Image 1 (cartoon, rainbow, N blue to C red):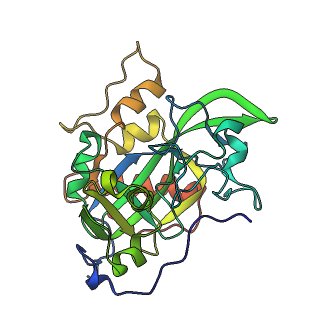
Image 2: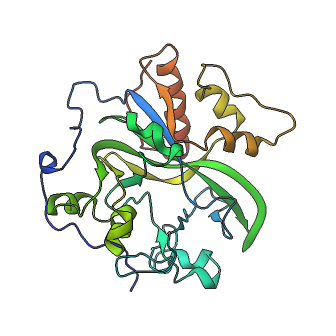
Length: 291
């Protein structure tokens, strides 16, 4: 039977969690900051996340560390396919990886994303995430055409969490309340498998019911990047002619960071452009316009 995650233990109010930033209940539902995290299988892995000719896709997580499956692990052969009911992500990995533990993160069943914010320089920027912010996930997809990978790759937006709560600095077994909210996340599973090594002060971000795994991948190309993203100094990305577009996008999105602050000049307009691109391919995903 295909299945991944146990249900939460109990329904517990957010105020019982170790660290929670309460959901923004003001009259203005718009996110103040939009963040970007690069997730999923990448060029360093021996398999790809497929993008189909209708724009739908599967998101393959990276292998877990360690790769040997423990009692709390999720294997590639356990994770249900998003696009092919009754199948698993094991279809898209080499046979030798099907029973390998996977770092299934982000996960959109209970809407969580974890990272080693305090130990991993790539993720350090996420310290600034607050309730009401939106965390987008960018992924590297490979075109699947006529039953095989075509060799064409691109970066795409795959989904987002509207941040509702944060569990920070986990260094011991979570409480029952914390397990109820975050227990499905890969970092919790890894800690349960090896408490001596992996209660390593990771953070987990919990998303609201407005969070979504997109049905259709949203291309992140030069047109979108020039309209939406900026360097740390506020300038447009540098498109070095000696590098491919894919290489440039990969270099600018390697680290997790805030990509839009709507309180800054031009921020509301860029946020609107981003949401328009998302909704064009995924109708019904609406956030209040900023401009």
